[in-house]
Image 1 (tube, rainbow, N blue to C red):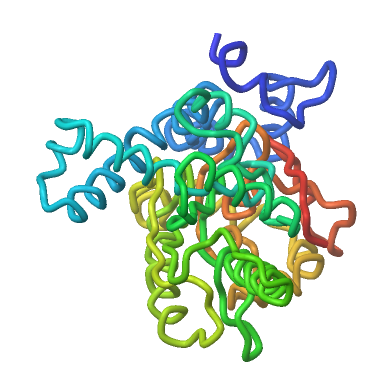
Image 2 (image 1 turned 180 degrees about the horizontal axis):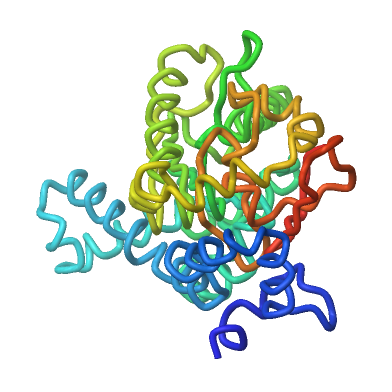
Length: 347
């Protein structure tokens, strides 16, 4: 029943080999004495996010994250309480203008901007939703024109950068080899280039000076949230060429700290991760691992040790025992079998 409801829908399962077959092969790779521990892990520790669950996180994003923030903003502008915002035509109109002056940008396929757009049809304009951080000058011009028609003289004062999941918090911003890298840096650089192009042409740019960036993930780990907060402080202090004024961080679901596997709380699966890991993974991912400051992926990227699977892919922050299926095996090492094979961007 659970296979049919959840696990069979995993995107990388192949025809004729769904969850039950994969589970049997996965358990069979362990010595017989270790199989009970592997099965216990699957029963009690695995966190699997199915499409309906991700859809729920997308659906609550605007009402539970965006709307309260906009109400507080409008209330502060008008000198009223947040619960009074919809009490008069003037304040309700101010709220609608603030909402229309908010831009939503998808940072990867996982942000599911197609679903986000459909979910918020009638509430948000298609001209304030962008599926990719690659926004050309014509798109900026068109979005600015549509915004001015809806709210004369307005510019986008808030930008939400949306992604599905973060486990380590380093994808958006990280300091490597003496320079900043990550999606926030890419977005900032593209905005700065677009601003300069508009200035050369004497055209107004649709982003307000000192606009606020909101980094939003549908799912985040506790470790990622801490890393993002620390990097936020550094970015605001160190970046001299930033186009934004402030950064705020939100998530739809934050995994509790206890979700991270631990050798004391989870000795059996911890031992399996150690015993059945193929160090050939470390060679293949060497360059990627250096960015996280560790030398092995034995317990997942950045040592996150998560038991997490998303229906469209398994994060590399999860333990490799779930997703690794290397093409080559190190001499004398165990040949790993994946329970939820990962589509890997690295290596």
